[in-house]
Image 1 (cartoon, one colour):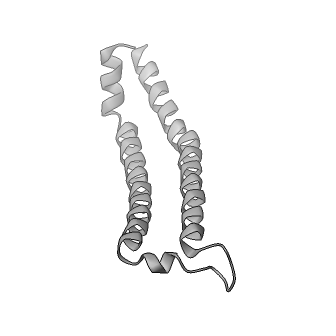
Image 2 (cartoon, rainbow, N blue to C red):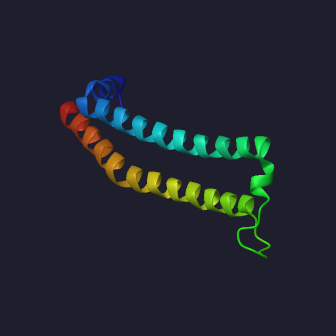
Length: 106
């Protein structure tokens, strides 16, 4: 592709929409992940006894392990949500932008 074609893609309003939507979505997910992770670290630092409590009476599973397992699964789920949205919505917009740039190029 030529630099002129890249420039046409960059000025396309759909490209601006793609960058904006993808950026907002990525930053939202990043904020959720960071808040949960650093929240967990803060609890470990300032109230570790809360995480050492058993989930149920006589249980070997502690609250800390249960929360960390939940976070692990939740982070993988968020990754899957991002990939699904990227493969459908974001890729579709990207294809539209490329097609329009090719049409203008001819």
